[in-house]
Image (cartoon, rainbow, N blue to C red; front, side, top):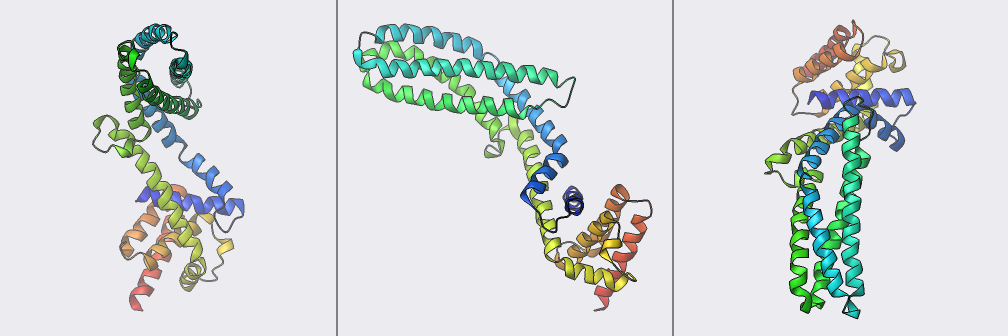
Length: 295
C-alpha cells in the first residue's frame, strides 16, 4: 500500500509543478512513464529473457519447415487451382524469416542493455509479438486451405507437422505477452506478478489522487482548523500533498485506521520532504485525528 501512497503524493506534486488542478492525459502519461520507468525496464528484461529462452531450437524447426514446404510447393504446381494456397505457404515462410530477424534484433538489443539501461526493449519485444501474431493467423489459414487439396495430404503432412512444432513456440510467446491469463504457469508467474504490481500502483495512485482533488476544499478546511493562518499556497507542495492524502484517508477510508494513515504520511514525509516535515505533518494529522475523535 505504501508504494501506492507514495505514487499518489508524487502525482499530486507533479500536477502542482504543471500548474494543473486536475489530471490531464499528457501529464498523466509523462508522469507514469517517468515514475515506473525502472519497473518497466525490469519487466521488459524479464520478458526478453523468457522470449529468447523459448526461441532456442527454433532455427532447426524452421529449417525442416522450409525443406518440407519447398517440396510440397513443387508438387502443388501441377494443380492450377493451388496458386493462392502456394502463396499462403510462402507467406508463412516469409513471416517466419521476419520473426527470425525480430528475434535477432531483440537479442542484440538485450546484449547492449548489459552496458546501458537506456536501450529500449519494449519496441523489439512488441515487434516479435506482432509478427508472431500474424504468423499464427497465417498458419491457421494454410491449414484451412489445405482441405481443398485432399490429393496432396501426404505431401502436406510434414509441412503441417513442422508448422505445429513452431506453433508450440508461439503458444509460449502468448503466455509471455499475457502472463496474467495463465496464473498457474510457473514459468511466467514472476512476469504476471510484476505486471500486476505496476498496474496496481498506477490504478491505485490515480484513484487516490483523483479522490483528493475531488475533495480538496473539504480537506484543506480540516487542515485549516488545526494550522494557524493556513494558506495552501504557502505550504511546501510535498507536505501539502502528503497531508491532503492522509486527511482524505482519515475522513473517507474506514478500512484504514487513522494511526496507520498518520504513520504512513510521516514515513513518506521523511523520505520525500525536508528534515522538519515529518514532525510538522505528524502534528497536523494528529490534531485532525483528535478533532475527529471529539466530534
